[in-house]
Amino acid sequence: MVRVVHTSGAGAYAVGMTSHSVEQPVGISPALRRRILGALGLVLALVLVYFLLTAFIPRWWAQRVASMSGHGSFSRGIWSGLALGFVCTLAPLLILLFAVTIWGKRAGRFLAGAAAVVAIVTALPNLMTLSIVLGTTNAAHAGERVLDVDAPGFRGATLTAAIVAAVVFALVVFAVLRGRFRTRHPGRRPTEQRAQSVGTQQDVHDTTRESIARHADDGHPQS
Image (tube, rainbow, N blue to C red; front, top):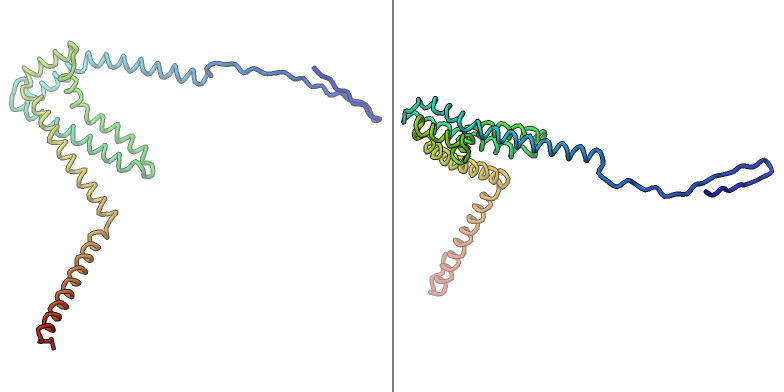
């Protein structure tokens, strides 16, 4: 500690100054610690929910499909698969396309997020069917046996309808992109037409000049 004393005729005063280094504690801040713990808790909860759903959803969904298919009706199994496969593939894709188109607009991010949630909910039937087809758990194998007996043709019809829906979606995307291109470049096609028209007129003038020149060389000038 260093103390400096100044005196004057009016009086005296002292100024004390202490010089020391302050060491900042090294470690994780409380806010960051809370975020890490929250993220770990969320991951553990998602893992737990995943295992619970994989043990329950395939068997439950297979029973629902069996009820829709008339418990063994081949035709109803096919029609159920076609309907769910087409609607639950095309609708989510169209909703996601809508979310992409409104992303940059006012309140677009909120609407796009809501649309994404709706798209996932709409695709749940196909996702649950996929959990039966690709699953390796006992519940998935049990769901496969239920579909084989009580919903014949459902899985194949679902796959066929999903492929058709994907093709339809590709055509819709092509139409949307083509419409946007024409909207952003409205003058391109008329410009090309004018260029072709100017070129055609120039060709006519050149042909007429060549014809006049040939007649002049032959001694038969044009009147």
